[in-house]
Structure formats: C-alpha cells, structure tokens
Length: 304
Length: 245
Image (cartoon, each protein chain N blue to C red):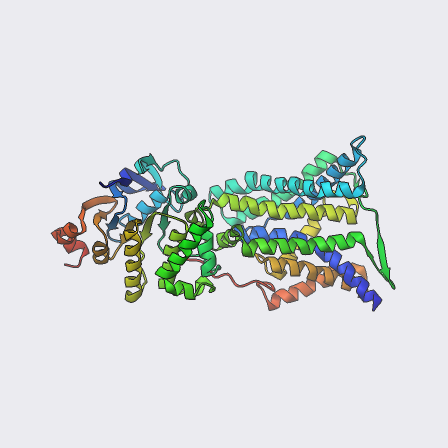
C-alpha cells in the first residue's frame, strides 16, 4: 500500500514534466496545425538557460542571495528568455514559410531541423561535457510511514497543475484564447475580425516556450545533470502523450502527460526497468487503436 | 450633401498571372447602400477581396489603380487594421464563422480590437440580439450547429460587434430560405437607417436592386452599367441579362 502511494507521488512528478512539455506541443498544434518538433529541444534550451541564469545570479559578488531568491528570480527570467527562443524560431523559421504558403509538411521538417540545430548549436557553444546544475533549494523531506515527499516534488506537481489552470483559463475565457482556437478552424477570417494573426501566433509560442522553460528549470533541479540531447527523448515522449490525449486540446495534453508518467512508473514498479518504454508505448498504441483522435480529440472535419 | 467614403479608381488586380479586374471604378458615399451585380466569375468577390487587403493567395494583387477610403489609399494597410481602425469590414462569401466556438464566443471574438468602452460593446450585444432574436436563443450553442441562415446572421452580427460602420457583404442570400433572407435584409435596412454604409454583392440582381440605392453591373472584370436602382431595373440590357427578361 505504501509502495503504491510512493509510486503515485513519483508518477505525479514524472508526469508533470510530460504534461508541461505536452502542453506546448498542443498549443502550437491547436493554433497552427503544426507539430513543432523543436519543442523538446526548446525544453533543453530552457534547462540550460536556467543553468546560466542560476550560475550567473549565484556568482554575482557581494549579492549572496539565498537559494529561494535565486529561484524566484530564475523562474521568470528563464521563462522569458526561453519564450524568446521559441518566438525567434517562429520568426526566422516558420513565419517565412507560412508567408510563402508552404505545405505543412515542409514546416514540420523545418521544425525537426530547428531541433537539431538547437542541439548541435548547444554542443558547439558549450561542448559535450555535462553540466551540473547548482542546488537552489534546501531539500526538505516529509515522510509518512515509508512514503516520502520532497518539497521539490511538491513544487513540480504544483507547477504543472497551476500551468494547466492558467492555460485553461486563457484558452476558454479570454478573447486571445478564443482567437487561438478560432485560427485553427478558419485562419482566413481572423484578420476580418480586426485581429492580427501574427500576434496570436507569437503569443502562442510565448506561452508554449515559456512553460517549456519552466519545465526545463524544474527538470534540471530534479535531475541536475544537463546535456544537449536531454530534450530529444523526453520531447518525443511528451509529443506522443499529447497525441494520445488528443492533440490540440490542452486537457488532452495534461491528461496524456500524466497518463504516460503513471504508466512508466507503474511498469517499472512491477517489471524490469528495461521493459519500461516497450510496455508503456504498447499501451499507448492500444489506446490509439481504440480512439485514433486521442482521449479528448474530436475528428476534425475537412473545411471546404 | 453626400460624402465620398469608398472610392475605387481604375483598379486592376491579378491572381497570379491572370488579370481578374481590368480597371474598374466606382464609389460608395457615406450612408448609402450600393450593390455590385453580375454573373458568377464576373469579378464581384475579387473586388471585395481587393478592398479587404487580405494577402495573396486568397486575395488578388493590386497591379494598378487605387482604393481610397475617406480619401486615403488603402494599399499600405493590413486587413486587421482596416477593420479595427477604419471600421470597414468584409462579411465573406461562405460566412466563415468559427464553428468550434459558441455563438457568444464568435461575437466576443469580434470585439477583440475595439477601443471603445465596455458600455458601447454591451449596447452592441443588445442590438445584435434584438435584431436577431434567434441568435440570443442559441447563444450557448456551437455555431457549427446553426442553420445556414443563422450562420449568416451571426456573420453580419460579428461585423456589428467589431464596431464597423461600413459592411461589405458577399452573397449574403446564398443558401438562405426565403423567409430568413427577408429577415436578413430587413435587419440590414434597419442598420442602414442608423447610418451603416453597405456595399452588397449579389447574383440575385432582383433582390439586390430592390434593396440598394444605386448599383453597378460588372462583367468579366469591367463595369458595364451603372445608375440608381430604378434606372438599372429599367435598363433593357440589364433586364435582359440579369433580371430574367
């Protein structure tokens, strides 16, 4: 019983990372019908930005900020800078193709290339050696019987739920959120409502990349070793989670992320860990067999 | 004294390499209802798309001539600014409502760029719902589930919610049941009495000329006749070609 609770807590934390990254995939897809394959690498860049920001702030002579203050400073800075990276990609890679009316396939390939450029750019810039993320939080462990929770785990889980709440509010209640939903349905009519399409797209990238930056920072705090390819696999997995949840729907990304987290942790609890991905993805495959549009997805009827 | 609001001068546009308008000129004064009539493919929609300044490939490229609004050239303007700053809006053919949003959300989205007070916006909601009570009944419904006529009402209502004072309508009667069509045009007439300027495109020339103050007949990218509605309805050529004898 206690082992089960411990697994649930671990799965919540692990799923939080998938959920945070999957939300970024689904936001961009929901607006542009583009699978932004660079998103996992934006998460990686976010982790490195968090590293840079933290080391810089910790290193400023005479400041001697406590860890929590570095965190409070680092989170918004990391999110803003990572959002800048996402918007830059949109500006220099995706927008020119969109302007020329390129087929979506080419934009997806461009996204893949951008991901590789980010990975290898990082490699060229910082070298192959791994970076050790500094400790920002005094670790507190709460134990109840044999179940233990750290303050960091609570923070990660809280962050995922908070981000979901914020995004859900934006998408369902605000005019800019309505515009985000409306674009994918009928992009043609958006400017006719007095709305500049590019602003909505940039805003979408700001949200998606900003929260990928947050995920990167929290991930680096939880698993404090950074390397340039850290975003590749987790990005793929989060993308699959978003698809299983129903890509384009933020509830889907959120649920899909946690679902994958739970499946992975529970598989490891009962089977050798080498079987983790095999079993996890087989389960997801079965879900897609039964519901190809994903858990929250609806079949998109072709617009005339 | 009439005031010239929209003026098209010797406008030539191209889709790719194909010239779709060969130098047309016409104008719309403030508070008027003007119609462009003509057969399918004559260049009516092309004209409205050019004025809306939507980018190619959807809209054509202007190669010569000018489009003036209140005396200012529209050629440097972006489509969203034309709506949000000049209050000139296109209700496109096929309506283009956002089917995945509710009726209410469609209306709210149209207020995106408005800079006037919440009271003004609230007044426009009331106006829309009193003009089209059907929309009030269906305000929580996904707009995809509306009938064609209701969708057209929604499309016109969005123009109102966007705070526009000049509406360009592309084939609003298309696919509408006669009764709904009658409702629709009555509502438009009412809006016009309150100061809305209307440029209407119709294949149904009879309907259009009954509704409008003046009209232009467009054929293969050129204006071939013009005059008040009464004059056009009496014109033997127009009668023969567009009014069914």
